[in-house]
Amino acid sequence: MKPRTWRCVWTVLAACVFVLALVPDADAQRRGGARGGGGGGGGGGFSRGGAASGGGFSAGGGQRGGGAQADRGSRQGTSTANQGQRQDARGERQGSRQDSAGERQSNRQDSYSSNNDNCNDCWDGAAVAAGVAAGAIVAGAAASASQPAPTTYTNQAPQQVAPPCNVAPVAVSGVPYYKCGATWYTAGYGSGGVVYMPVPPPPGN
Amino acid sequence: MKSTNPRWLPALQAGCAAALILTAAGTAHAQAAKKEPAAAPSQNQAREILMRMAAYLGGAAKYSVSLRAGYDAVQKTGQKIEFNEARKVTLSRPDKLRIEGERSDGAKSQIVFNGKEITLVDFAQKVYATAPQPGNVDDSLVYFVGGLGMRLPLAVLLMSRMPAEFESRVKTIDYVEKTSVHGAPAHHLAARADTADFQVWVADGDKPVPLRVVITYIKSPGQPQFWAQFSDWNMAPAVSDSTFTAQVPAGAQKVAFAAQLQRAPMSARKSSADKGAKQ
Image (tube, rainbow over all chains, first blue to last red):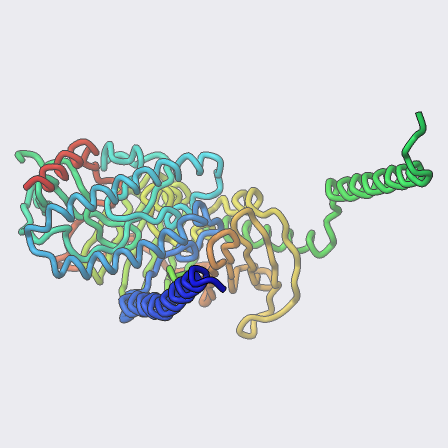
């Protein structure tokens, strides 16, 4: 064999050895990551949501909701853990992140509603169907609290144990509002418990 | 010009044609059979028992029942975790309902329809939310679950229109066996709907109440299940106005249902996010 051919062979062999050396490391990292995720979910970090949590005789959009719900639980856990470490200055960024989440969720909500136009019997699967981040809202239900909304499929929001940023509440007509950056939040009750949602500024603000 | 086709080609063509015809005939026959399935006696019997249960519960003026329930929560990893809860339901038609709930982690809640208002109390988080009640129990359940997005397992079983709900949802149903649930003779039925299969054990006799329900969400990842075991059926509970008065603990904070909150316009939130990013 020519010296040039030998050089090629050695180069290929070296590359193989390098790749093989990386594989166990990547695998370990992957497993470590999974453990980390599981660990993060341990001690009460497991999601309580999913398609079966609603106990309906239909899954509604549960096909998507199950997964989304699980995702949400895990995202929520991470978000909550991170929140504890964040300082006020980071509230702005969080607000922005939540806005993005809300936006994504709003898109999901839109598609969920349209999906359910064809599903008259799915109303009892609706509560758990649309896994959402904080900021869920039912289309058309925002108009007035004194008027029951028509039968509209909605979504739910996850348990969120703290306001989106670490600021003192501003009480307006007895309702606490939280100003994170330029965005106002207030507490609402979703099927998973209290959630904090971006709302228009309260009167006088 | 001499033909290049082998002699056996016509025979092969004829054979293929015959095979095609036979296959088509078989498929057509199968499709015809699919179009007109004859309900087996066991299916008729199962449907009749299910509808008897629906009519009995749907037509009851009032009742109370206790139940233990559980469900699979499918985690992101695919792992299924079962969570449990206990509930006590008191229903008085046309428009009153009270449900006391306790989750497996001890969190207690209460849902009350008093005929005018829906109240949800979360004792663990010390909050409560109210909304005007849109009408009778049926309408209020649809509003509560479908409109407000609240969780209320087995809501269909609380409706007076339960027969119609099952009529429209159940695609097939069959009788599994005569059995017993905690010593009570029962009919075990298995039904299939579009997005969920469910099994129900209906008490044998003149009070066809459900004793156990298992629902499998067949189109959801991991096909999770919800189950409930009923006990202490009382078709003549003593109820009064106080039964349907929500017990809001002292110091509990009133919050809106999340679905009722007016959401900040997306543009405002975007601009706030931009400002936040610049600051």
